[in-house]
Image 1 (cartoon, rainbow, N blue to C red):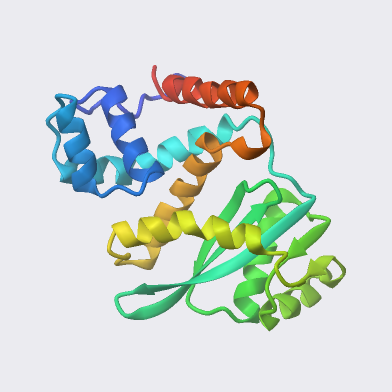
Image 2 (image 1 turned 90 degrees about the vertical axis):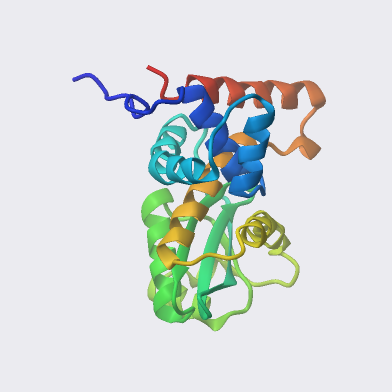
Length: 232
């Protein structure tokens, strides 16, 4: 069975659509700033068109990027933390999990950060990636209670400063939240953070621990995979 090209019924070329989505999701740019960047390249597209593109094609591209992922996330050590997010005046919690290399495992939006929510997040992570050797969190009691029910207390670590890696990882989201003037719906937050995490995993490499030549090879490989993506 022939796979349907998701760009088939769009007037703009796949290259223009992909670069618009990539600029908006990967970098802390507003829709209007992306519109201006494309305008400087001679491409006349409105910001509402870009909004439509990322809403419709963002999840499709995310799935394809996950399929082409070069390696699976590590199960040596996970870092999990939650950040406060206000949506229309109501407080929500965005749970984010990364491995020791900084790869984002998943993002979850919940209304509460109690034992039930923590247990749900942990169960989904283990179901998707298997059980790690160590899980690092802050001292929130909900983690301990959830892990007790899942028989994972022995791998739980809450040592001070050990979770700095995910605290720094939150900065990508905070920059985006500020540029978007916050989110309007919980499902929009869940959708965007999932897409953003996939783009982050694909394009970002830890250049501080890689030799320059190796880093350039990794970066070019990411670009090559991106250029081949969904073009049929």
